[in-house]
Length: 176
Picture 1: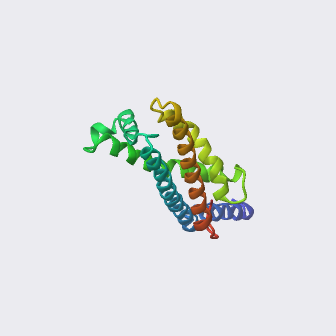
Picture 2: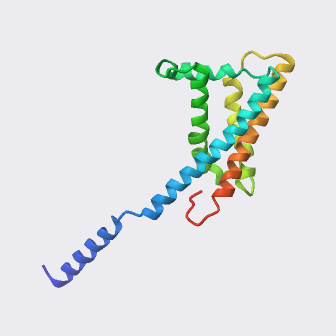
């Protein structure tokens, strides 16, 4: 092996070795961003739940509708809680994990200057799936209230999710 070949092999080995070292700062940033998303989802789902409770108090939403989630997934057979409670836990986990991940990935493409304002159209998109999924045959004024209150609740979810992203995401290591 000539001198040039051994230099090249040494440089190549050093480059590969340097590239395989774990980047703990980047990994920590991902963990922190996940925490921010979960906190934002928790706060947003709390705001959404308040809107749904208001709708339920006006007979424009049935809390028992969450039981359908438990039945569809089969978790009601596994967990010794009421189907409504199991369904709400699934609803909460979706609001804390799945939707914040989606929001973080597409948030830059939504209209608005801050994530809080970007969250409003995001909430609207989520509502378009929620409204038919949780519809319980409402008619007349109950239907108008159902649509208006659940839409407002989803706007509040998106806005508060985005507001938490704005508040906690303003740091150098954030990926959001």
